[in-house]
Amino acid sequence: MRVIITGAASGIGKAVAELLAQGTALPGPHQLLLTDRDADGLAAVAAAIGPDAATCVADLSSPECGDAIVAAALDHMGGVDGVVSNAGIIAGGPLLDQTPDQFDLIYAINTRATWLLGKAAHPHLAKNKGAFVATASMSATQPTPGLGFYSSSKAALLMLMRQCALEWGGDGIRCNTVSPGPTYTAMTKAGYDDAERRAQRESMIPLGKLGMAEDVANAILFLLGPQASHITGIDIMVDGGMSNNLMPATGGGTGQKASK
Ligand SMILES: NC(=O)c1ccc[n+]([C@@H]2O[C@H](COP(=O)([O-])OP(=O)(O)OC[C@H]3O[C@@H](n4cnc5c(N)ncnc54)[C@H](O)[C@@H]3O)[C@@H](O)[C@H]2O)c1
Image 1 (spheres, rainbow, N blue to C red):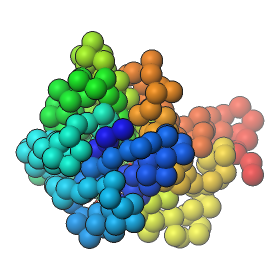
Image 2 (cartoon, helix red, strand yellow):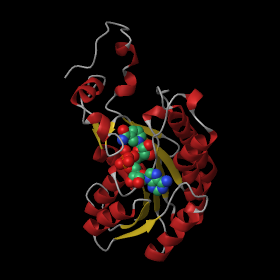
Image 3 (cartoon, rainbow, N blue to C red):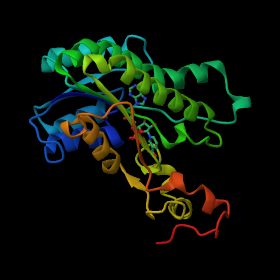
């Protein structure tokens, strides 16, 4: 497949690139257009993969990002069979303290960029009956203290992708999301390197551990590939079961917490 991956310099996007390049979970050959705003990180990931990976440094907060990234993909790969719109930022604070500029920035990156990329890639995905996958979040369905813009931008992303599934299904394009729960990446490293905080979080996860970038990437590869050939408009939660833990956390039922 010829696949565009955003946020490919780090974390989940990097893991998607590496797993595709390995060609085991989703047999290749694959050509990749890796994009991120972090030029150095992107170059390192591409260098480790080799000639099947090209790069495009782009800032997803720009209204021109979709056209620029798809132009680079056509230049390097000659077409597009898959798009993984994965990049995102987490930023926050109480809603009462936030500003319109902060709102616009997080929605531009976490929500609008996916629409811009899908719109620019649409003719190419339609031609190749391709797949469009976006990384949302468990926060899209769980209001999260201090992360009101983040969680609502991801909720909008979930619906945007369902809308794409509806509007573009007739063109043969499958559109789905993956929603990670707590996952150990650069985005969350500072918090989870605190042993006490990590243990507290893991005690809330029925499978007893944080997710790793590869756990999420494997779900993305499934949705990209032919095994998901009749699946569109869905979200796969990759959270170790954490989103099912409300009743135990509040002492409902027997109040039993996840055991190791
Ligand atoms: N790690 C988690 O616990 C978790 C949980 C739920 C959802 N997610 C989502 O997973 C996705 C990937 O995050 P991750 O955990 O791999 O984090 P990460 O920080 O390791 O990777 C995110 C990448 O996106 C890039 N990026 C950020 N803003 C950009 C911009 N304006 N233009 C271009 N690139 C930009 C960063 O440079 C970085 O390489 C994000 O959408 C995030 O919201 C992560």
